[in-house]
Length: 403
Ligand SMILES: [Zn+2]
Image 1 (spheres, rainbow, N blue to C red):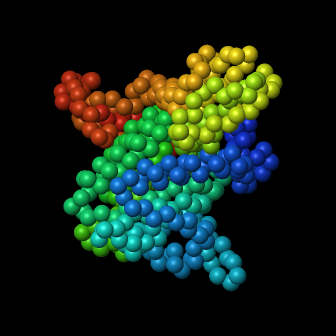
Image 2 (image 1 turned 30 degrees about the vertical axis):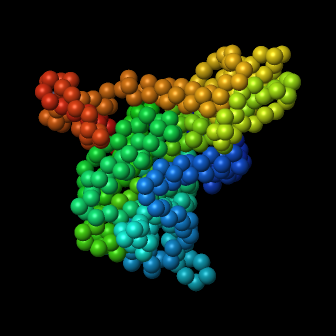
């Protein structure tokens, strides 16, 4: 998907957007700057907010090193991951944490919520050896943040639990301004009897997976101590969300952020000390500075601030990352400006999905012939575009692997 030039341009955007330090990035570990850390923290917070509606969530920050004997016992049934790091330290062998599911599920069983098992969210740094031809988007071997939620629910409530998770993901991706589709993919090796991928179409008309969730497979579930009659769920996303925002963004320079991830929502530059917009008690972060150079706004635009406002010689104008400067009336509400910026970003990103044929309404037999990968949930029905018979929205691609 990315050649050397686009890879360099992509890394440069992370540097000009003040996410990563120029030095230290490359073969080693990326060095995050305060702005980048603030964006990443927002990502984990927004995820936790959406998944804690109607549910009690315990949040933990697990250690990076797991004793090898503990890890090996945890994974003995399913064989373990083949892409982990082992290190020796102070006479003992450790695994550098690749995942949290077993620990999270064990904790969920210990922390009941109104007589039922709870949900446990971990935000941590994960490590995987990366093999194969797919270039890593953001990382060398470190994945940060790795945001992983595990939930235990009665098997009889599986449909309801899946619907809840789908609803939370829809809300989450709406706030991230990423127009995704959630696809039921079916069984996934022995990891899961039922896997769902959250798929985004990039402007290059390629599908990319930005999050996933699944019903945890039998052996894994047993290792975590989840008894029969209960399902275990695993929901996860990573910093890849940021990579995708960068890859799909308009312009060539820096970041574009939805308001849910932006550490600052509006920057106002003013030549007379007046702030011409109404901070309507929304809690949005508005930064005010004296109007300096003509291109004062470029630094903030590169950092991805959703709304830029300039008040000069008694007139006020504003700009979003996806639009041009336009005049605004004095006293307009900050919430309206930020909502406008989010809506514009969402519409921009939706154009690729809407132009793509990766999702189309087909009947099952027509879809099979063209590379059926899964069914979109919640279900969207209609006549098959090939044969006119009863169909539903499906994810169809001949690509062998989807990253
Ligand atoms: Zn058909």
